[in-house]
Length: 237
Image (cartoon, rainbow, N blue to C red; front, top):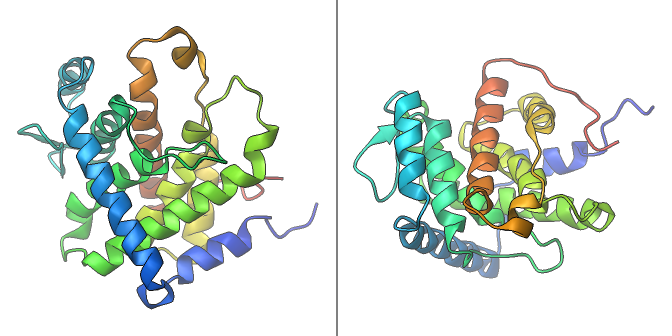
């Protein structure tokens, strides 16, 4: 096997991307996607199943790091991403990349919000840094979906399979990840990913919760990579 991971060029591109590399159309489109995601989270805060999730997760506890939008409490960064991702997808009005069939912002935006709110970003995150991280995360997620989505068995959900990689890219950029950290983040996310289609077929609350799980796993993968945990290198081979 070639020692160079297939996704190394994509990771290098994401790690090196700067706000000045984004053209005006991309910036405006990314802003629109962010506003759309925030609106979807607000709309989803009153949907059945969300309150039940809050009750369950309060039992589990979590450090008061990041804000859960629409609710008057903070929790750990990964759980905040879980809640906000669940709300963002709950009414199924969130963005969709038509070809790869991925709801990227329902996964990536909550992860970035939780990271920007956490103590890890105590110096503050600029709007330009946030938009650059979001644009990179969306781009990577959808490109992976375009590359592999057509080969998936219909029993799998592309959003939950590929969303965590976009979270690692976005959150990693906010934390100033090196190429090595980004690669490890991808490997860790690969170890986390999953998400079958059964809840979509049968109905039930898990359909709206799965993107929240993917967002949470993306945050956890990022934080593990930050602390030096290594992951598989040949993720897509």
